[in-house]
Image (cartoon, rainbow, N blue to C red):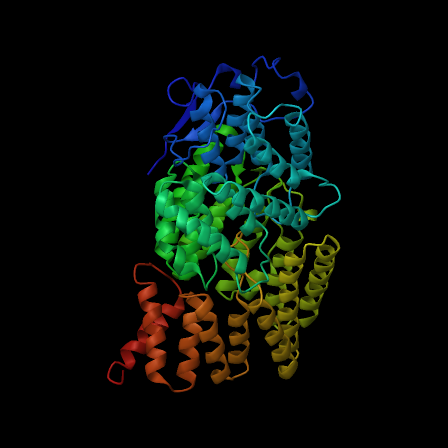
Length: 566
């Protein structure tokens, strides 16, 4: 479906937008804004402006309340750039609307689930809130909201992101109990809990706590975009994903105008191995993102498109569809500029996609040839994405028997891990540590040291079992359990390999290579029925795919030859 682009020049019909929204508008009403770079301009959306239903304008001017609610729905689907335009337009029309300062600050805050925020954005938010605090609030709740968001910006130069997230969560908890009937307070409190969650906590205590609040609200407010969106984020893990499947299938319908809302259900589809639904979700998301980019910045690609393509390629690869995966990667290789330029998801996906194509196909020579993308980004700051590049190359070299080249890549991994430690990016450094131990294992394998190889690879597997996947990615370049199983197969230990493949499939259901590996391990053990079970899964998984993967032909041949035994 092709989405037609619409520029909303006037809010007089539904959105109450005024001519002050134009970049050349007279903003003399707010001279104190002169030194603050705020996002003004025409609201640019694709398709009909439908982002869900909220009602939270408080005491802003009555004719601007629909506009306020639009801005809030945009925030709830992480459409921050357009949300900021909406709230700034309200300030241009009603400079006494204190909650519009809050909305603008929340838009500037940008991606509360990120590991770190842009210093320029934090400075803008801090300055804006200083102005807000010179105004007289209409009621106590308005001042509480300003105080709450101010906590996140307070002392941002000296406090790390996680500390500020925890401080914000604590303040929102106060408001949650102070205003028990306020829907938006509950929704933003639940998001603050999720944002402060430790991805190394496999009990998912915060995610469950946040999800419980949201699930109760969703029964009463089924068209609220934030409730649906944050439920999906809370349950984006193998253990919890089944709890969000119904919600995932609703979210895109609730907010059909949001590229992110079209993509977000695929987080759950990926967790459950529902590859066809994930593909549909991300095709729709990428189309919407392209539509938006063509109007906002036609010479660049929006991060939402790039993020969707990462998930799309991953899904195609799990169906054995190399051809369609390659088509999407070709699109990515043509990308020269992106916006915003500092968004982590872009750097991650641009490196992850070619790495996936090489590693998923065990094309070790291709893996050794991977290079940094030519896209204009500050790659010197992209430590974790660059680590994926060195990890993939090292794995390629080790499997080709070039241990010395693999060791050079390992040194680069260690340097990047140290830089992440220096920056106190503990989650990212932990992910690189997993890669380091895995590569150590495969280097030992390439040298013929099987015992040490298994020890290192088991350590990597154990470390990965104690951490969760970040929302930025559909999955690891290759799961450590699966890589351990591959090592066991290379060492002719099919019994151990089968156990590792089974464990891998519990957390990564319907992974192409996981199923194939389990089938081969069972075949080696002469367990024909179990091998047939997995080979049959592989055939069914790829039944609608025109694939060149030899594994599918092998599966069909096995099933045909053993039809009398099965």
